[in-house]
Length: 396
Image (cartoon, rainbow, N blue to C red; front, side, top):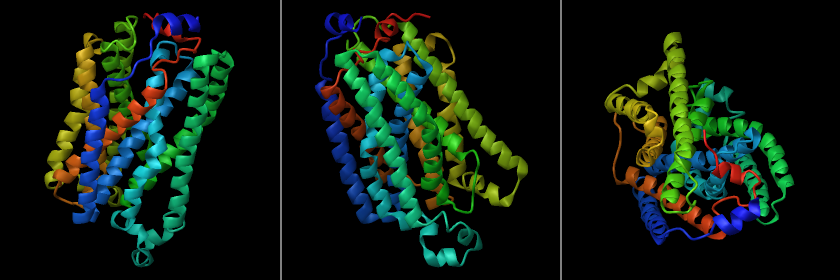
């Protein structure tokens, strides 16, 4: 079955040259802006570097989660596109490099890195056993190690299957995915707490990790959907991808738009209802001065637009609508990182300049370069997977 798909249906070919060129151009522009930003305003550059890291973490780790989820769920319809998620998941390999600028600005980002501040603050002193640079570095290294290790193990088995068509490799990946899932849940939760929630070490939320998780899955789904539709329109999947596949992606994105909104509202309503000063100040920062308008725009961008954009059934099967909403959701997720991070740096005023514009360009450039490198070395479809033909023939 898999040999038939490989030799008679699927033909490997490189991505359009424009993708490669765009990736290198955007990355070069982004790197120049990053360097200039650290030269002119290290604090502001550090906060933008943190947003960049958390956005790329969402795409990389979220894509690895989607790969593991397919194996655990035994999904068939998504098998032809799993390799796209594998390519996007390879971003985890460069996350330690992306984290370097953040480490250069640790003292600009986090109050708890200043020993004199911690010594004079009873709350920070009580959290010092957890919030200290040494333990922070160990935890971050552990997150990267977990993500990179499972990426290599799962994707290597997938690539081996292209030539061997050995179904035992699928069973191995199911077991690996089962081991990855609890570690993913722990690492993504504590990672979001360590990198972002600890920006305000006096504040806490027990739902913060789930909030970041919901946005992570939505963003990785959006990246996968855009790549799938774009590549299918360019003929990379042949002629077997139909509206049934499109609808599945559209429905998933719509579902996670609602899941994200539910988690975001749950966090807000619980803190609002309790009305405890030590909890409410975090939201008040985002509802004062210019941040009030940013917060209103954020709600429109992250929920209202994608909700109504994907609400109707035909919109979930329309390739143009899917591509637009995928890019919109990715923009909204970066907006989310801005909303989570920047009020700590600038209270009352919402900063935006060439610095805030350059880092997202760098993120897009990195994604395009990584995807192009991986696609040039590997098949775009898992041609040895025994579920591939059923995935291509999927109809609901």
